[in-house]
Length: 167
Image: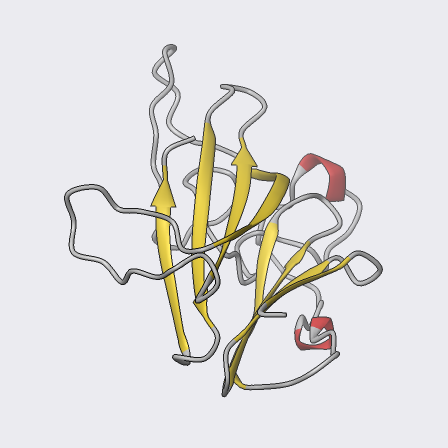
């Protein structure tokens, strides 16, 4: 199977013929990037997250008593502005009150046959049995904003695609 959700390790792995892409739902619900590289089987790579004292990096409210968890240093799969991560964000939003920032947390995912479509744009195409799509939904509880991350996995063609969908 090209897309594997390991509920025990809380990871989602995307496998092609020669590569693996793995992410993990963190303990506070942030989607974390673990690995992209040579294909590996049945392995949780969460050991790659080295939790250490983050010094002056801020923590989320849930991790307020821990110094080893900060969005400023964790490898987020899709980062957003003004939630404790001071790197360049993938998403920056202004809500109706003029507040800039979002705190995107994992809400769920779905695995589908075939590859997602990109209407009006050049894209890779497949039949229902040639690819799988992983749809991951992230949500900011304060604003209700949702983001859909789409991953296309062409296992035999050794190709992964990624798109930000409309949620």
